[in-house]
Image (cartoon, rainbow, N blue to C red; front, side, top):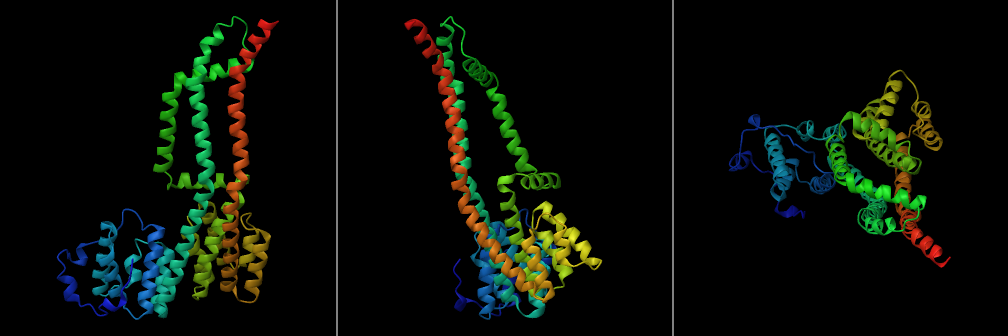
Length: 377
């Protein structure tokens, strides 16, 4: 979205908004979104708000410009309702409280109270921009291996379901006993022929269930615990969510929010159940006077290097700066590890695919070799 600050009316009157043809009194309308703003849209929105507020545009005019430029009907309705409530005296933090995350609500509230709203918008834009990049890195790292694996599985299924049965009639004419590997391959082919529809329906059902219940507590809990038990991705997942945690803590602590409150809020907006539970335990420990680094040492989620540096930050009263430096370091590590994942997984996939295809070919052609040998004998 291009922002033309010169064309913005810095003091849009209440009457102009009320004359809008789609006007509905704010007390009859609730600001609600069936689905939250996507992270990519949030990053763009906060970046645009930062530019406008930093250049002297008041928040009402800024929201009104976003409303005029928005194309999505759902988000356009949100901006319209927001500018209505701003006209009647509500603050932006109060408007987004029930729609956006607690992290955003308290960050914007602090910006309003301290007069540093533009700075808060910049930090939020950077936070969601990093979150989008991390998601892209993760998707990019697993996309190629997943595509190769699915292609291999389809190729193997095609061979077992269509190619192997063609050889089955030939095998039965040999008269001699078939090799064990060929018998097993024929058994698998018959199984797929009899139950292929059931297997396909089961796969679709499982995918639907995962998509439908992915945000439930049960699914979030056990999928998170499973991710932390898989050796290959465990450390990568830890770094991703620790990076997000330290970025949130850096913003909150540097904005002079008490550490206890910062820990509580950051734990709510991480979106990873195991870390949410860890942050809740740390929060409870801080309430009774424990030191942050000691509480982190008790959790297997954080490595010793991080806890030592957090201890240093506590001792010199520079936790905000320490969180920021640790976040930058983790961000670089995540980016590097994501770029390496594809090159690490690729050889293993080639070996697996080659092994499966090779086994099928051997099982199909071995009886022919045996028959040829017996005929020559």
